[in-house]
Image 1: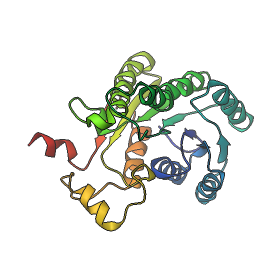
Image 2: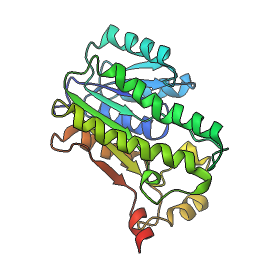
Image 3: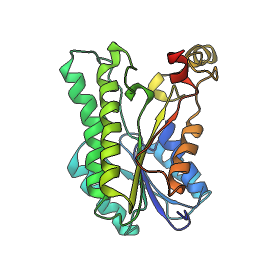
Image 4: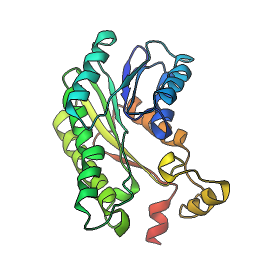
Length: 246
């Protein structure tokens, strides 16, 4: 798909993978809708960076776990962009109280990381005629991976991957749905890591380093531009899963 004169929505685009993805799409000529929940200053900084590469970029605040906010999000988008071509579902949280039996954590994570994606997709499909939907998953969503202390997070990512495949079956060939499953990526979800901490966490990968948000963004660009990939979960994990098998 030709990226020029196209419009992309990236949720959770004020930092981390979302930020890198928004900038990468702008570099390809996209008009990018930069969604954020809380940090307006960081979102404006992303907007300024995107404006260096493309036109028609906008910032829209919305807590996408709330359907009323998503409705307002798309109302705002339609004022300048009547059609959406690519949706990147990236926004998400991590709950420090996660565990195998903490139902509150399960409800919190599923609401913000899974149901929120479905709400956004529901309203995006009212404007998308042809295009791509790309969900950001995790290697923790793979069967047998994750840890008991992040059981809700892992379960949600597994649900997202199953949903991605089923949605792909329904929407192809006009809209192609895929997901990217990152390994350990340098984002704020890990907190502020020094070089030693990054090196230690990166040892879990065969590449012996953590993954950069820009490398995940490159995978998103690949899925946005390739018209032959449908219903796939693209792992960008530095060999993490291979290391677990050996």
